[in-house]
Every structure is written in C-alpha cells, then in structure tokens.
Length: 119
Image (tube, rainbow, N blue to C red; front, side, top):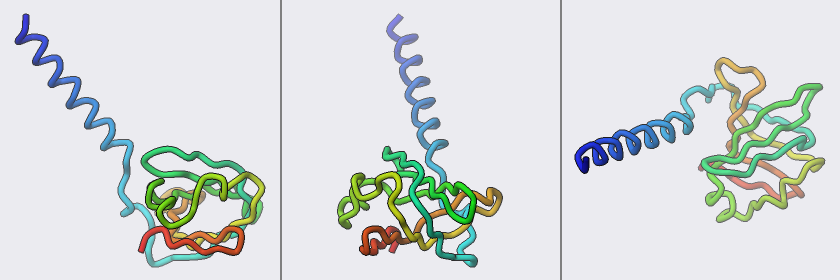
C-alpha cells in the first residue's frame, strides 16, 4: 500500500510541475524586430504570478500586454496601484508572432515614470 501511495505522489508531483511549466511560456513567441510603442488607457489588470497582464485600449482595440514577474516590477518601483483602470500608459512592446492583440512589455511609462521591465 505504501508503494502505491508513493507512486501516486510522484505522479501527481510530476503533473503539477508539468502544468506549471506549461502555463509559463517563453518570450520567443514575440517578434523582437518589431518593437513599438503601445499607448492607451488601462482597461483591466491581472496582477498574479508568474506575470501581470494589462489590457490596454489602444487604437480602437483592446490589447493584451504581458508584463514582467511581479517582484521585478515591485523592486523597480511599479506596484499594482500604479496600474489602475483608466490610467494612461505607454508601453515599449514587441508583438506576438501569431496573435495580433498580444504584446510583451519591455518598459512602461505611467504617471510620468518610466520603468524598465526586461533589461
């Protein structure tokens, strides 16, 4: 019985690790040769690990902008309260190679403060 419990525990641990790795994508699906500025009003914010996500109303579209890990942003002086709905932001970003409405943020300017997110 102990052997079956041990095998089940190992299998569940492996599934949990695989799920976490699957949920955390890499940055290679963004086009680094097409960096642009995305400017607009924050429509929504998802502040949770592993990355925060902003939805920005820009040019008549609602764009999904993936930010850095939370602790990196906090360490650089960008907290959740600074990214409240309705605020205007400018994001230096790279477009996703397949999803035209998804972007990876390299830096963000909010309230006149520019925060480098990747470098």
